Image 1: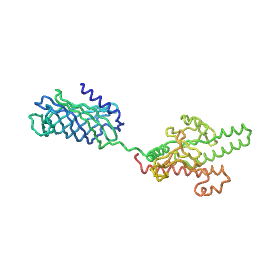
Image 2 (image 1 turned 120 degrees about the vertical axis):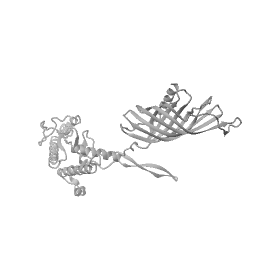
Image 3 (image 1 turned 90 degrees about the vertical axis):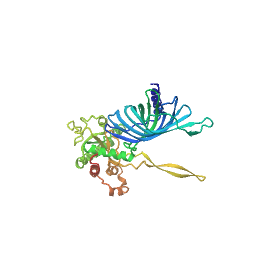
Image 4 (image 1 turned 30 degrees about the vertical axis):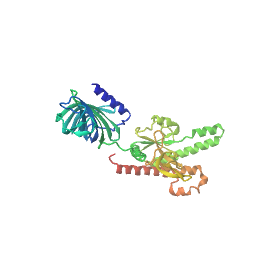
Length: 425
């Protein structure tokens, strides 16, 4: 019992500094791999008065079948070499086949092993160590080694890195005449950990999910009220300017609503004022949606409250994320150079667009077609820059209707591409 406890304690201490999270294994999964390591113990020698333990390597195959999330059935076969020192001067080398049949029980990130260890002797040699210079010379001794032995076995196993597992087993003779400590590594051939997902793959996966959610969900268009600006104008006595701002904002909101009602049919669409943004964040949709007169109407209800996205006329937010590309040798003078990391991504020019965001008003990202350029907004704010916007006028529409038509078309094209390439995902 003391040997068992010390064996388990040693494994637990060693594992605390090495183990990593195991990938998910489901009931019914069959795992297999190559195993190898070293064993330290003594063989069962009939006729020897005193036997000391020695080291020997082993190599073979192992397999595991997941019976449940906690329980596994295992089988392993090794070709092994074992060494023992008998009567101080006799060295015994034994080779043979080791078969292990055992169960495993999962506790946290570890597996406890319990089963049987069978040793079949294929061959052995004995040596006699002389007293003068301790050089070995072969001399057959009259020790008898059982051809086959079966011992109870206990142990521990855990993952140390991707596809590699450490195990340690202790097999022992009930009488105490023989025991083997086994330490080894298993390289798992199947059920490997997936490689880290790249940022590009992650964005593609998220965008694929989002376009399907929007298709089955709702788009809530946030219309601005410009209340802070209007209140500031009125406090300073700019009543006429404040009224002009109210009229201009109302005209812009009506044009956006009419454009959506005429050109958008990718999903359900509703409209709300920016002053009700907190209610949208909290999922409180009752009484906030607007009718054709831009009045809150409690009769307008949201049919799909599960997959909710928002949209608004806003400046495109800059993508500040940067991703490592490569190292480049840069001269530092005096015939010296150093490696400098280079990145891709980063900032971009901002412009007005009809931008799709999630329910928390976070801008979506590519490859999701999350915006359609709103050149009409830039022209209305800078009417004297018509010549500057001439190239953009050729490429982009100048009306809210054209902007929404472009957004609706982009959504359909991307959704159809996703459904065509990933119909079962």
